[in-house]
Image 1 (tube, rainbow, N blue to C red):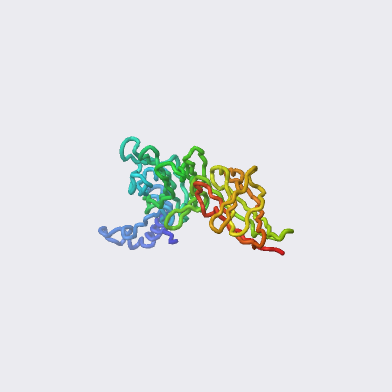
Image 2 (cartoon, rainbow, N blue to C red; image 1 turned 90 degrees about the vertical axis):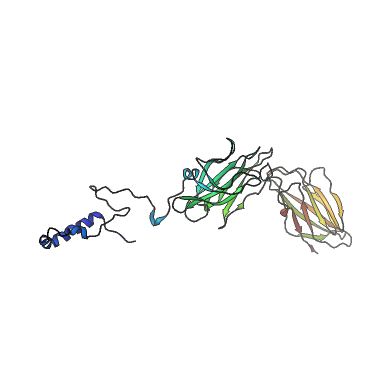
Length: 352
């Protein structure tokens, strides 16, 4: 980087120059312009050593390489930035001016207010700090919340970077946003709470895509959520009577925030059926339902607590002249938030 001379060095050089031209300076007429005025003025830069006898006027504080000053929570609380639209609400959106983290647009209760904390983090991975803000608005009986990230605009301004998440106007399976935070790699962490009587909590994580924020980890909503998986193929072999038998090993996991009562597992096959079950609910029976060409064996399992898994071993039976065929296992729970993982296919292979 180019280095300017200090004022002290400049004055030393100036004194030497005057000594060198002293003879000619005496020969000048009284009306001649002084030598010093013909030299360029040396203006010190930030960081240059200033002489004590000549105080300098203060200059604006800037960082190296012309970078803007870091964003602060207090600055954001008194900034104007674009508030995204609220879901299903007429709360103000667009450019909004905040004063001490509050914007009043009607009566005393009609305001947009910041949450208790503003989290400073580099949410978009550009090397500069951004601010994660929880906004609250009360358009009716329930207050409404959304989380946004704002960033530096120019040298001293503030602008919206993007909306992270927003609630809906009434209690729902989506839940309520209760707290904000930041993790490594710029991920935004939100604490969601179940709006129902259970009061369960979830952590959901969001990341910057280059165009906006999207959820990258954690559950998406509250409510029951079961997942079904099978352990490899069913290896069927003949018994002493010539029938094919093989064990189907199924694992069911409750990935939701609520207990699952009387979970019902459906085993579907076009040929054969369930012979016995290890791990079914005590005292329960296997009920058979015919669905066109398919036979469905319904097995009631013990209750599943949140996060609990249960593995059951189901012996499949293909009697008489029937050849073993593959099928599916499925568990349907009312209100399941993710039906994509409720079903798993099983394959049957024969031995001997």
